[in-house]
Length: 214
Ligand SMILES: O=C(NC/C=C/[C@H]1OC[C@H](O)[C@@H]1O)c1cc([N+](=O)[O-])cc(O)c1O
Ligand SMILES: [Mg+2]
Image (cartoon, rainbow, N blue to C red; front, side, top):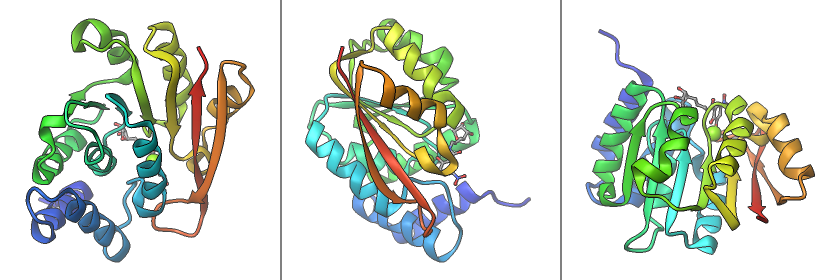
């Protein structure tokens, strides 16, 4: 039976990265995606912008929407302070299974809670089932047409506080026009665009950082 791209990505991590070394896991995935097969990880260029935002926010509670193979999960978790936690939601069980192994290889499983399911179903359960009050940082990287409805849902569920940061991938490519319009025009957000490129390509893409003003 044929292997899948996520399975081949995991094999590359297990072959080329050192167990317990998150940076070597990130490097191995980027090398695989540049030299072997493109995959929809945030990548090294946008990854540096992600790192700088995570370091600046220094969050205690982080939500990631769209785990895929766990690349950005590892990047974020690697920068978290000791008792901080990252909850990452993934709809696709095959992706989730690969991501668990990538996260384990990096040695960061203590900081990460990967939950399988649809963001629209799981977000309303964050307070009661996951003991979350509010999120300091949310990284949006799942279905592009879910960014806006899920943002409105987080607002409605009281999961954002004054100063909570939303960081959204792919606001240009594949693009999230309704989300971008919302965070840039709403008086409840202060937004900033970080111009970059679609992972492993020369195509323009970027990250949108939005501060919730309460
Ligand atoms: O669809 C993208 N991400 C959403 C992922 C969707 C899939 O993973 C989460 C969900 O379970 C679904 O199975 C995407 C697509 C491109 N792209 O260039 O097509 C680039 C990116 O960075 C992306 O995050
Ligand atoms: Mg993306």
